Image (cartoon, rainbow, N blue to C red; front, side, top):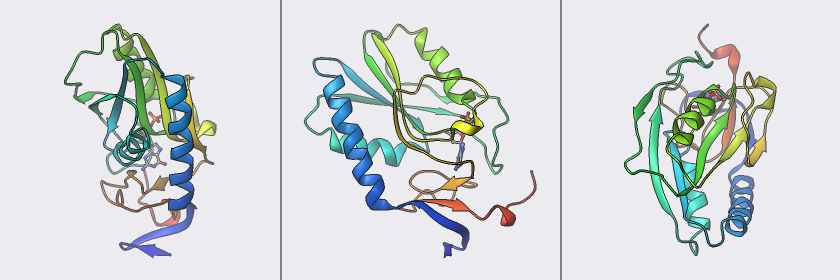
Length: 184
Ligand code: 5GP
């Protein structure tokens, strides 16, 4: 299969399946955050599509949103383990019930760094919501509270996830044909 000139091995999660699961996650979050000051924090850029869909499914919940950008893989497909804040939150999170929205948890290094940063800012609570999880790749444990899909170890793109900043706008999650990737 080829999309935008990209060699895709297979579609791992189609658009309909993503939509259904995100609505389910929203229902759970709505129940859990009744009466709380919910703030969604989107980790740019990969989690944008997921957070927008999730937020639309929470249309009857009063919430705020903020965005944080950290270093990602660039053109490579594995984490270098170094994380740096490129864009910090606009607002303080003190006393907020913060739900961190991630696209995918791989080694866990990025989330561990972000959690440590945000925990020091005294939120009322701090939880993690990720669309995808690759548990077999974990190097450090991170407590995931909401997970859309656990997937096997392959490099995926689409629905916000990129390869070299491209393919984020595919409306599904697809596995790259890794034989076509440049050597690390
Ligand atoms: P970690 O720090 O958990 O190793 O990596 C987290 C970040 O790496 C994710 O937010 C994402 O940007 C990137 N990442 C990890 N696995 C994949 C993958 O399969 N595809 C893409 N496109 N990015 C990934």
